[in-house]
Length: 156
Length: 74
Image (cartoon, rainbow over all chains, first blue to last red; front, side):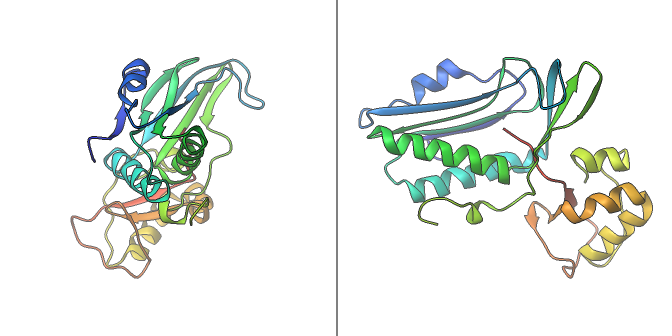
């Protein structure tokens, strides 16, 4: 992992402000930050109280590093890039995932962040459990695990 | 190693299984834990020590086979 990549799996709150400051680069005029936050309803599961993320921990950072490498291959103009995910309990309103990128111009910052979050959701071994007012179960809309090299998108 | 719904189906995170190949290990695991795991299996990816693998791949005592159901990070 290079000094321009911030890749982390954490059981604590995601340090949004620190990453937002770190991601800025003199040669980059755009910063895009995406946060996924824990939502209080999920389809027919009302009053979700919290999420709990389980991970195949030794392989999360390596997979996210692979995503960062592939993102830099597809968008060589990326300055700094952060991929951070939570593990363990996440309360409603807290961020469960953050992707941040700086690039010279805005259009590629949106593109690279969008690609990174879509690819993370399909390739990183993490499972979300939802705990709501009448039960607990694994997240809906799970995707069969795929490989980073097979991720769709520009310059495949 | 079992994760997510596969951990629910087996009631455990990890177990020791004997077999000469990845396919042997997976078959022995399904035999041990039964129907619920068998139903999940077609949607699972199988990794050997962190990488995708094939049923024919040989395994040894220190190898780690993981059953990975559909993921839901983010």
